[in-house]
Amino acid sequence: MGFGADTEVGEAASLEDVRTFWEANPCAHETASASSDREYFLGVEASRYKDAPFIEKSGRFGEFSGKRVLEIGCGLGTDGAQFAKGGADYVGADLTEAAVDLARRNFSTRGLEGEFVVTNAEELPFPPDSFDHVYSFGVIHHTPAPPAVVAEILRVLKPGGTLTVMLYNRTSINYYIEIMFLRKLGRLLLRPSWGPKVLSACFRLPREKLEGHRQNLLRFPHPTREQWLSMNTDGPECPLSRVYSAHEVRDLFSQFADVETDVHHFDRSHWPIVGGLMGDRVAEMIGRRFGWCRMTYARKPAVGPPTTVEDALRVGTV
Ligand SMILES: C[S@@+](CC[C@H](N)C(=O)[O-])C[C@H]1O[C@@H](n2cnc3c(N)ncnc32)[C@H](O)[C@@H]1O
Image 1 (cartoon, rainbow, N blue to C red):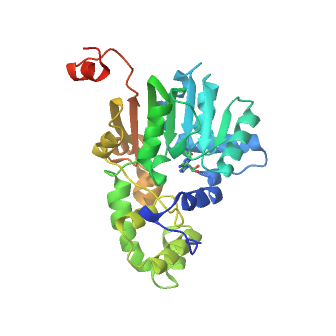
Image 2 (cartoon, helix red, strand yellow):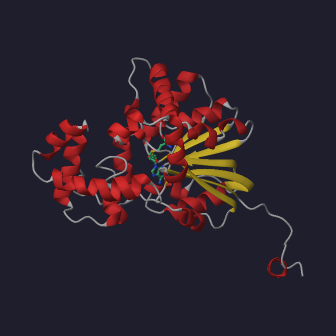
Image 3 (cartoon, rainbow, N blue to C red):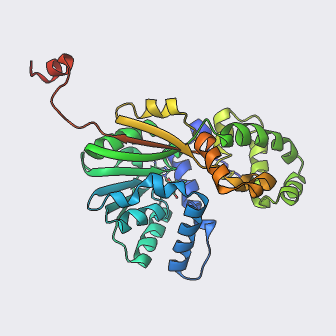
């Protein structure tokens, strides 16, 4: 509950802080429970695509048959399994043993082929030009050096290869209203020792998480914007998270061609009464404008003949 004494939070978090958190909290592992591996992983999958149906469409999982696909931060391998089912030659990479063990079990129980590697995506162990497509969902905003991961994606993609990346969206209801406004108000109610118990009873929120948030407040009474954001996305112990606007992703992927970005996902479960009354169409419309998941699609520039005099001079053809 709360951070370890040595854990840094926000911009100061190290790769070790990030690894320690995700080793102990493999992503979405709590979204299902079952006695057999098969039932468990199918339960996680059903819950994921029911809560966020846009993932299947944006991920274009069936379009890479016979292509070499790398997933960065594969987690439990739920999306990876869709690439493998679609006939891709799939490689899942993750910082943690915990994720890779679970993803291997997921693939083996479904009889799917895939290769897995425990690695830091800031230094990928693959030669240049090795993959046709790189996919990464909810990962790069958690690593200490996102530009290093993006440079690695550029290096390992074949010329003309494509990427699909999800990063948390700055211009979202989650960021401006939930995290930066409502949760800051809630902070006042967490100060007294009885705060977590009362908030948990009134809003049906998990008491253990609220206790964690209270511990954080005691340790960081005046958190920076980055610390506050990091502690309020993937649970109170998550050391590092960032958010990106359209402008910021265009900067991050500036070396790629055909960069497109769109947003999805309004999580109704965060809005107790209103969310329950809201239909799928309305939730989808809100998500398409102010959603939490910013998808980016881009292509590594293909190597072609120089198109400008400057390029031609640089490569020595003039
Ligand atoms: C929020 S989970 C997402 C997992 C999966 N993509 C999903 O959507 O369920 C973040 C994952 O990113 C991994 N991760 C964080 N930093 C990483 C890095 N530098 N290199 C590789 N994986 C990383 C974590 O270990 C964790 O499994």
